[in-house]
Image (tube, rainbow, N blue to C red; front, top):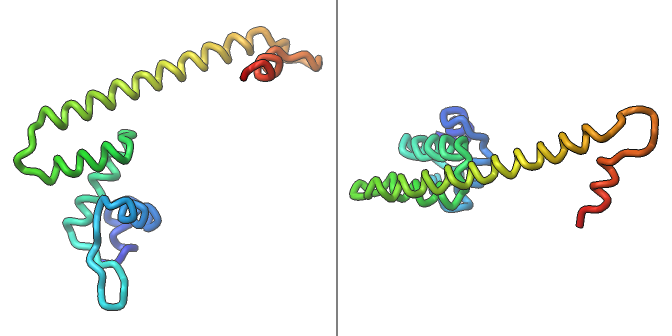
Length: 129
């Protein structure tokens, strides 16, 4: 099937499919005219990638998960380790975002929010390195 049909069936854009090919995550067969020809197995790989990216796995983790998915002799402990490491990274990012939200809430609470030009939010942003 062509890239348009592969995009429709996988839920990814043609641009992202080309990107994942450039990253080496899949390799579609090429027809004599140079067009890509996707098989059902390629659609399964693209869906796997889409689901992994929807869970915010970084590309390198997607690469590792794909390798494990393809390896029928894999140890599930390896998959679990990648998943739990990703959970830890997500939780760290969430905590960092919560800290930013607390900081902004504090600054906003000290801003009069009226017609005066004084603004502690802008003052604080000016001080940041």
